[in-house]
Amino acid sequence: MVVLSQIDIMVTEFAKLFTANLKLISSTQSQERAQNIVRALLRVVYLINASSELQENPSPSFGDFFRNQVQTNNDSRQIYEKIAASYKQSAQNTFFN
Image (cartoon, rainbow, N blue to C red):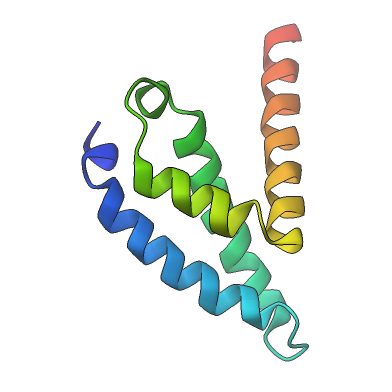
């Protein structure tokens, strides 16, 4: 997969976006925009994290980013968990319908 061959570059850019916008979530003025950016970023992180290719060939930089930035921050962890639940629910609905 082309995306995973560039994972280190992506992780660097994800980290920049994530850090900048996570700080803005607490700011009332920029909160909605920051939440939208973080939510979109975490959707991509979820899809990459769930990919079979990453499972077969783990990326140390992606793993570090996921553990140290996504999982250690309460706001991002909650958003990520909602995204994961949404994808799982969507998969169940597709399977059973």
